[in-house]
Image (cartoon, rainbow, N blue to C red; front, side, top):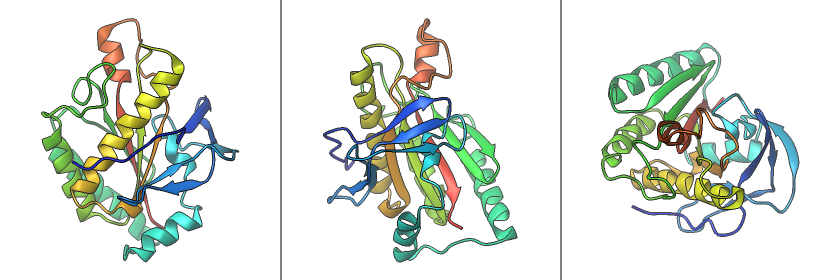
Length: 224
């Protein structure tokens, strides 16, 4: 598995709800080409919904779109957008049924929620060996549907302090993105970020709740 060096603060910082502060301009890991955010500048951005912190990196981001098209990936148009995402959603559900991944359709976006009970141990960014076959199958579908952006966002439970949880969430997103690149998913499609412990989806008071919060979410959006 190839991984990315995420030293420094390369993240999107959550403000409230689905509003986020994009801390900086994009940087590219020279070994893989995956783009992240850097905290040298700031600007308020709005996410696409719960579980999509990187919705802030929207289809209006011309640099990202140009990079994807420059990599030979075609854009979608008109009624073809919904049909394309419908097929991708159907194939993902068939491939991942019973595998511990929760799939949500939000308009033309598809969100894959990968909870910690199948991905990471508490305090760890090492992918569980039992989860790698699941990511293999995710990679297969992503390669079958190249005309989508892939936003990978890591999350942590409330164990530890905010700074360490933010760094841990970044490393979790990094691990998943790196694995997908290793499955031949084009790096130009992928952005990564961490949300720390700011976006819980369950109570942190129980082990079961913390396992749900300790997760990675992948949001797939059409290249239009």
